[in-house]
Length: 195
Image (tube, rainbow, N blue to C red; front, side):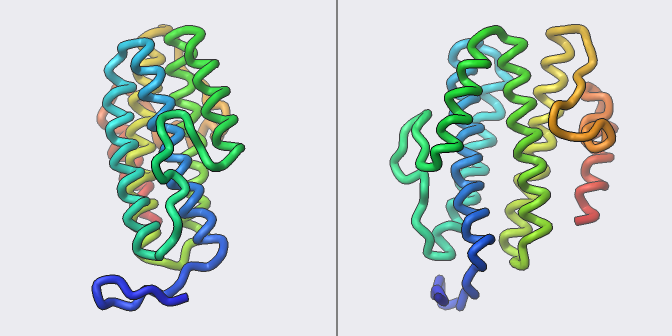
């Protein structure tokens, strides 16, 4: 159906665009909630900083959920409570893994950002809406920054180089490069601008 927002007609989303938007809203909550929970346990600033960024991501997606007249799957759900059973299981599993050690917690952060990046790339490829593309593109840039932050913290903690679990080495290096250098973010921005 067509929604009227601020006097401007908004063309309806396809079923897959709608599902993707609602899933992204909760997926960003998984990231925020995991980082808040692990941040409280390990008292490491990277979790707190990135949790704040994830809240901004959630807010940006909520703006789209509202614009298209969809029902927010997050609603009043507190930390660690999810509508999607798969995301609930993901949250539970990742928190349990991250509570084992700080290195495990940082690996959880890396894993979440790898998942988010791959999901956002797919959503951008499938979307026909410029407003969705813009928000997803901003989220993608943020997730790439978060990935670099977690990889840098993990490598400082372990003294080793991180090997990605979901991305190819080439995809991972295009984003992270040397996680402690500024050149990787420039390369990632240039790559991201090709969207």
